[in-house]
Image (cartoon, rainbow, N blue to C red; front, side, top):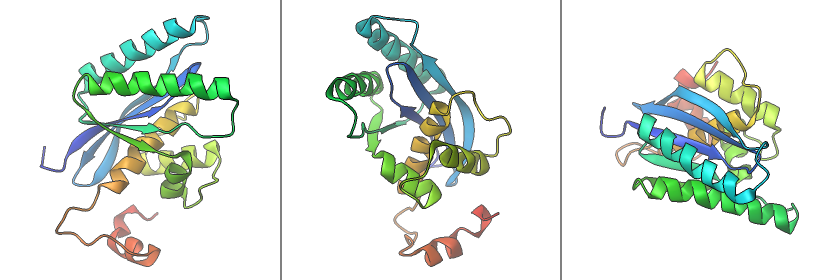
Length: 184
């Protein structure tokens, strides 16, 4: 791998379904490694769910050896109990990453949607369609939590795509000019 090449683990935290997506970044081009969900609905005990989140994220890190974790930040507007549970799930996933010395990055749902679709209010379906187009895969997963996790990883790759000797685009026009290979 080159200096800027890396594997990124993206997480869409949840206590019933937690999405994960892993991408490889080589020469600033993202490619899909795997995606899926951790299904936790059948477990009624919240702490059992947290233990399973830690174990599964730990297994993903051991198997795919990412260098960085990109995770979606909890969004406001849900009830307090939901926010607390979601924050715990996010914290457990982050703890698993930190136990392997991964760098952790957090992005708001709006930032993720904006970076992929140009619309911070895009639907899960719009994000999934864009991720499918960017990463070139055929079958849409059963749960869009998996594509949401990929979206976090791809958003992170966009944030760090320009090296010090490259010029970061200052407008959409500049971005399009510098990324003609990404246009359909």
